[in-house]
Image (cartoon, rainbow, N blue to C red; front, top):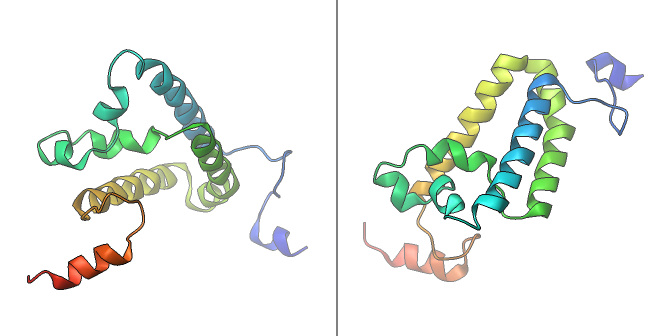
Length: 138
C-alpha cells in the first residue's frame, strides 16, 4: 500500500493524535472555555489576543498568547480538525520537540507579520487598499 511506504498510520476516527498535537488540542479547547467565561468579566481577548498597537507598546506576550485564542466555536473546531489531520503527520516526521518549535515559531512569526501589516479594517486586502498603497510615496 502506498501510504505504508511513508509510514502513515492512516486517517480517520480511529487514528489517535500524537503527544504534542494532543496537548495543543487540549490547551486550545481549555483556553477557549476560559476565554468565553473570562470575557464576561474583563477584556481577556483584548489583553491576550494580538492587538498590534499594544504589542508595539510592550505587550509582547500577545505574540505567543494569541495563537491559542479563537473567534468562535466553529473557528476552534475547524482549527483543531486541521491540527489533528495534518499536525499528527508532521509531528511523526519531525519529532515532538521539533514540531513544537515549528508550531510556536510559525505562530509567532505570523503574529509579527500581522502586527506589521497595514490594516484597512478588513481581513483580506481590498482593491481600495491596494490603490491606497500604490498612491503612497515611499
